Length: 275
Picture 1 (cartoon, helix red, strand yellow):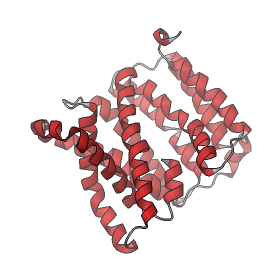
Picture 2 (cartoon, one colour):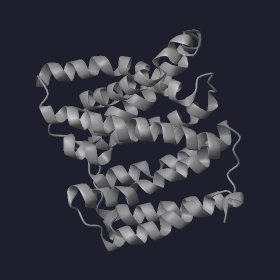
Picture 3 (cartoon, one colour):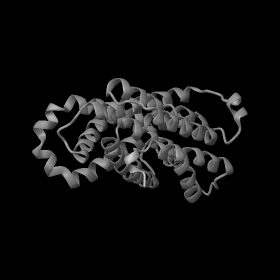
Picture 4 (cartoon, helix red, strand yellow):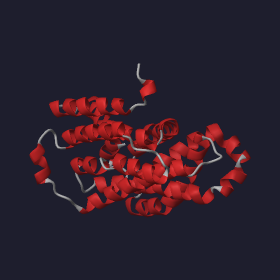
C-alpha cells in the first residue's frame, strides 16, 4: 500500500484512490458473495451501526489519511509512527479483550520494534536527532490510532456474518463515508488519467481484498496481540518489493532489521506451533 501511495501520488488524489481501492474490493466481493449477502439482509440491518464505524475507521481514515499524510511527511516518519500500532493493539487487547500479554510476547514485540527502528533510521541512531515533524504526521497519527481501534473492534464486536461477507458490508459502509470527499477531489482535479485505474485495481486486489481477509483470519486464529506483530513485517516486505518494482536495492540495515524482526515474531508464536 505504501509503494502504491508513492507511485500513484501524482496521478490520483488521496480520497479518490481510497474510494477506488475499496470500490474494486466491493465489486469483487459482490460478484462472489452477492446472493449470500442478500439472504443475510436482516443481519446487515442489525449490524449496520457497527459496520459504519468499522467502515469509517478501516476504509476512510486508515485509507485516505495515509495518502494525505504521505504528501507532506517522510517515509521515516510514517514508519516510526506506525511502529506504535502493534503496541497499542496489544495493550488494548489486554484491557478490552482480556488477552493476556505474556513475557514471551513482550520480548518478541521489543525485538521486532527494535528491528523496525533499525530500518526506519537506516542503521544510524543519530538519525533520531534529525527528525522533523510536519502537519502530515498528524494524518499518520490519526490513521495509526484508527487502525488500532479497527483491529480491536473487529475482535470485540462478534458478527453473524462470515469474514468475506463482513468485509463486503464494511466496504459498502466505508464507501458511503468516502464518497463526498472523493467527489470534492474529483471536482477540483477533473477526469483521471488511464494509469489511475490500474493503481486502484492493484490497491484493491492486494492491500485491499487479500490483506484485510488475511488479517481478519489471523486475528481469529491467534488473537489481536499475535496478529498485530505481523505488522512489523511491513519494513521487510516493503524493502523487498521496492527492490523488485522500484529498483531500490536493499541495504545492510534492512538485513539487520530483518534479523531482529523475524526471530522476534517467531518467538511470539504459540509453543504448540514449534516444530
